Image 1: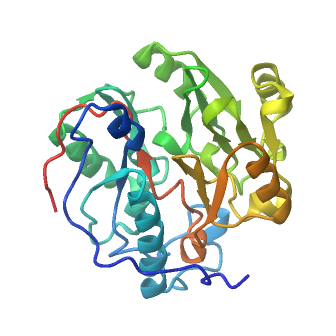
Image 2: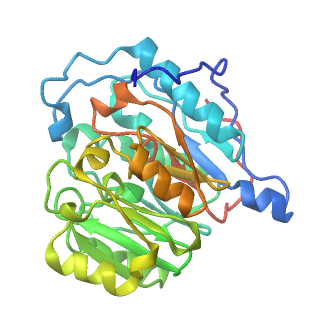
Length: 306
């Protein structure tokens, strides 16, 4: 398939922040997602294996079209909030790494890579402006937000990856802050440097994941918690296309690519796979999930900024 075959520009990027305005069940189902327009996106440095040989190779107009396609698809099912992009911060578009939000509390990321550390203050300012309480986080414990911490709503737990970007102490810190059982998973393949690149909890207790990205103890933990009939194991080809770096909304699974076999298994599980090609962002090591941050239990009304 042509990497851009399904790209459709959905109009000008809106610069208004939105959040669920009603407390009705239908409004709650829409949820809210934080995104950042790719105005300054590019591969300007190397901080993960996907960026090797890609510096200066991203095509901005194509990236903007792909991002607009994803945004347009998601906006049909979720309310989209926007944080203003900032010159010199090409990875700010990957809002999954802004932090982790549960209820009215936000943990702001502590980036391991110095190139991304200036993002911390900008994301902190955004969360504070929306009325979130910012939980204190140790300066010496790296943590890269919802890139490594994924909420499993079906089980009321948090899965937390560590080993490449987030520190080994991060899961216990999250458990202390949110009083929610947190399962530590060690990542062992540098290509899958964040948990959300290889692990995707879905509604109904389903889990899509790439087993080879984890150490044995982590695999045992996953298998002890998620029944075999709820596990969708993906092969290396799908994993390397970031199929697990997916966003679920209203029963649809938005993802960069999907083999026929994986598509069939997702359909059998009751989901509708929707391919939204994101080849330009793959050059930086990200896809659909990386470009979004779910805002569950929105704290207050989002006001227009940027």
